[in-house]
Length: 299
Image (cartoon, rainbow, N blue to C red; front, side):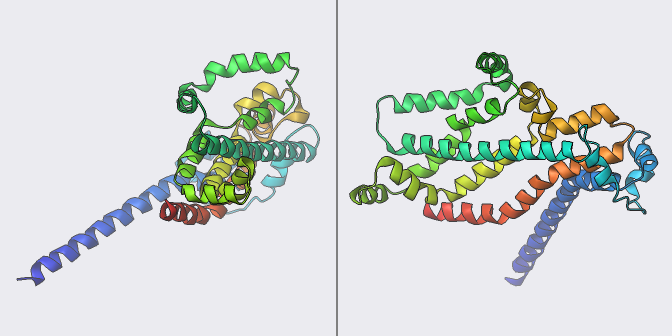
């Protein structure tokens, strides 16, 4: 009498696991296929890439390239900018500088504001927090023109200042994340730090930031991916080729050399631009899981 229900439960559990595995496998294929397709087109000759993309030859889309055209990558990078290799190196350096500064500024400013809202008691704290959250409802298109006029009057156009300076005032979403995480830290820990003689800045730097590593990892990685791939901001404020980031340089490459005629080189340049984000995601995936798990246990 008891074996039949047990067997039916085991069969039902096996079917559920099989369905879940098939769903995850299908989702993985759907998500990874564009990346593999870009890799395949970047390794094709110009004629095959033209037939696979513009010509709509489905056979070329499915068939993996037999001849590996590794020369497409150096050819694509040398054609970014007016001077061979220098245009790509210059754009890469600009992207690294802007992204690094924005990540550091966002982490420091957002964690500091989140700590102040979560722990410090001052009049109007709740209202300011709600007002800050309300700014998340404003689309970027609303503030685009006023910000451009402001930065133009300051003489910051064609410099990285409009892209970097706003990050020192925090990000509303990440401030909210820091505030929620810091609010769960026991008050006894803060009181112990005060007894040891730490000021508010000392408590933030020596106590809260080490505890907020899960939130810091998420904030840093998300900010890196957004700033590295940002196209609209550099396009508006960076007008000269010497100040262009990789996203703007890649678009200039498409317009100058014709992305339709040289699809293989465009895909090669796009993959090189995406490579830092892919590597960062693979490196931070384990830290995300471990960090969020530790944060859940502490909470």
